[in-house]
Length: 118
Image (cartoon, rainbow, N blue to C red):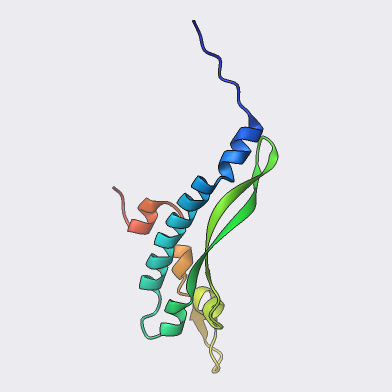
């Protein structure tokens, strides 16, 4: 006797926005926040202490349905100088100071965050 599986878009959408998924996403974001704080420039405590995690619902583009709403854990840093440190800036003397890309380097898979293959 074959069992037929029927995909329910509404059920998948509800799962992706559930409290359990939200908790898992916030937990992953918290580990990313800790890694970003550890990788931030050490001389700047303000930047390191400004990393925080937000639980939000995001709209994500999908191939099948156009878009989907899902629970997300977002890492943010609202220190006044976080953007110039992350992406780079020009010093007062006109020279280019490259960005540290603290969050950019940590984005991606757990393997990428560990810094190697395993």
